[in-house]
Amino acid sequence: MATNPKHEYYETLGVPRKADTDEIRKAYRKLARKYHPDLNPGDKSSEDRFKNVQEAYDVLSDPKKRQMYDQFGFYSENGFAGAGPQGPNPGGPQGAHFDGFDFSDFMSGQGGQPGTGRRSQGTTAGGGFRDIFSQFFGGGAGAEHAEPEHGADLEYVMNIDFWQAIKGTTARVNITRYDVCATCNGSGSTGGGEVSCPQCKGTGQVSQMAGAMKFNLSCPRCGGAGKLRNACPTCGGDGRVPKTEAVEIRIPPGARDGSRLRVAGKGNAGTHGAPPGDLYITTKVEPHPFFHREGDNIEIKAPIAIWEASLGAKIEVPTIDGRTLLKIPQGTVNGQKFRLREKGVLNTRTNQRGDQIVEVYLTTPDPRDEKTRQLLRDLAEVHPEDPRAEIWTKV
Image (cartoon, rainbow, N blue to C red; front, top):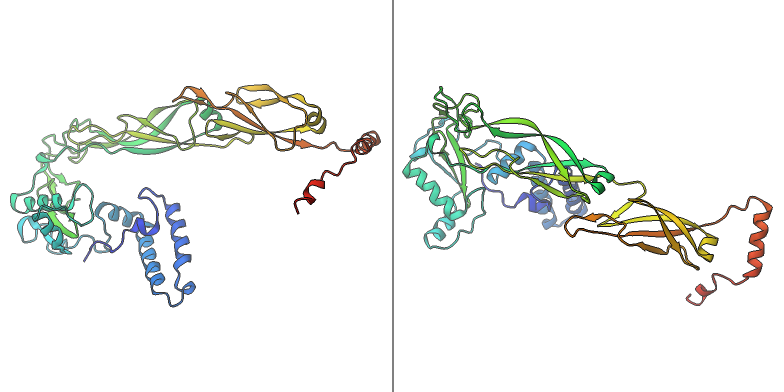
């Protein structure tokens, strides 16, 4: 029997629903070390938490188990309850099976109050309950009555280098998406023969949740037959086919690491004439060995000689636009920072540039020859003061 888990797996591991495998693994290892029974002897609460963490990881680390959990809110080794040797059309109205009853949702729905059960994809506790019973006693819809569905959005990651992010660029990305079937023009039907129903995979049944109640229903796509008549042989009645195409992406100047760009209409095609989803590109910017970006500012470190720091000087420093002069005032100390106005990254939203921050550090001469050593000894005689004298007053 498959029922809703007693805890939400993503919340148990403390990760978002879009977390990748590495994030899930790191979260699991951290929590497993924290709540392991060997490290918490006699602590019943830690033992229970450890079991929940282990259960959540067992499901979310397995792509097939995770797909089922994401879609239906539970995972079962036996698939959907009730779909056994009775076949796709067992007894009862519309082949319905009940599993894990919780009448609090049903009673609250009768009383006009919102259901307290957890939400599942595309349904709420009260609305899902009414929809399900309308199927029980009102009959399922055939393929010709399938509701149009908006196409899903797609997410891709694009790697770009530092200069492409600064200056902007245009690149082409190969994506795989569902496109409108050219054979049936998206209708899903061409007057051909029977094909297996893509929604129920030929079983004639689908599972639906309403709060803590789970039902096996006759597939609304094929009416429980498991096959679609007059379905397009190319797309199997879905009206869409997978297609790989190159999409041109324009990266604007100043793109940041993690910037999200939208390409309208390049997601999956909708069904039965519904609009397509969008394509979202997330940029991953490679770091530069010298320039460090902080928001719209550029930060660098530049060496200066002792005499430049003491006497003052004008030095050349690199910027993202090329070389520029920086004035070093007399008495500059190690680690002092200077600001070059509007020498940073262009922000396309404000149409303003950030600044460049230059941190200087002192370099000492290498006294390899006698003349240099003598000059340093002469300098020491001119300035005999102890540079560490002040620290003793603070000890």
